[in-house]
Length: 147
Ligand code: SF4
Image (tube, rainbow, N blue to C red):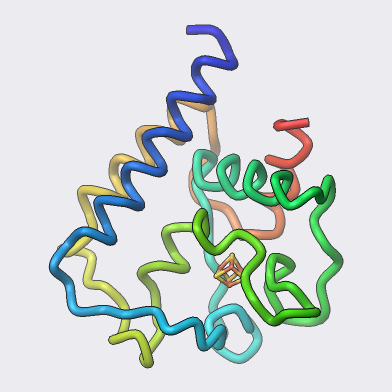
């Protein structure tokens, strides 16, 4: 498969996985408190597979940005300083949808999402990724790749 076709197919599959997650009858509700975007506060950082990172990079490019915004200590670089909102909310990574937010109902159990995690790992393999990586490094590299 050509590189562009491979990328397009991968992004479709990642979006499909996100859509399937949100369609699951699991009692969670992100109310955009954004506490989870403050990694120093939570002590946790989202890790992205390559497909997730490329989708996030594409979404950031769609905002007109060509580089990852600078970050202040312990805050996600994709959190807009002006509005306090996620710059790529519709395409935010899997971890931002599923992990550790008590206000949203707590972390998903592995059993609830393991099939979707495996599909993200398959996409990662098809893109010659190196497995899930911390968000800043993963999206920074993906931005260089999407041009
Ligand atoms: S990608 Fe968006 S939702 Fe996820 S931590 Fe960063 S700002 Fe928050």
